Image (cartoon, rainbow, N blue to C red; front, side, top):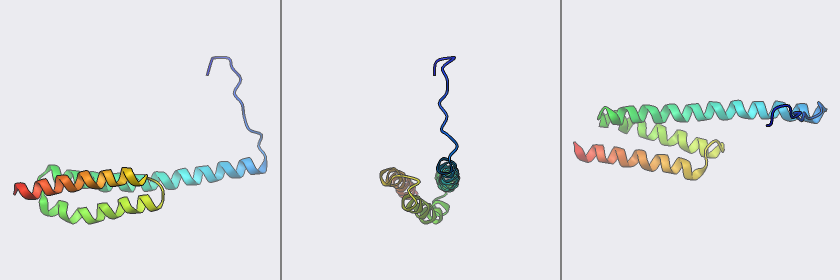
Length: 99
């Protein structure tokens, strides 16, 4: 915004206040779900980077499950989650064949 331009504010009607509460609640839930997914992915990538095939194999199903939950809860789009799963699976299979 240009400097000195007045900022438009919505009137604080009951519906606007309710909408603000809903948006904050949804944002908190989405943040929590996104954090859970990112942590699972980070753990699996760490196992893959340390060439721990057995550990990565154990984490794979839990990570895929978290990604599927994120799809169901609409935190991630289906294509994005499937892309993550595909790349993790490729890395896991490459690690298995290397051993």
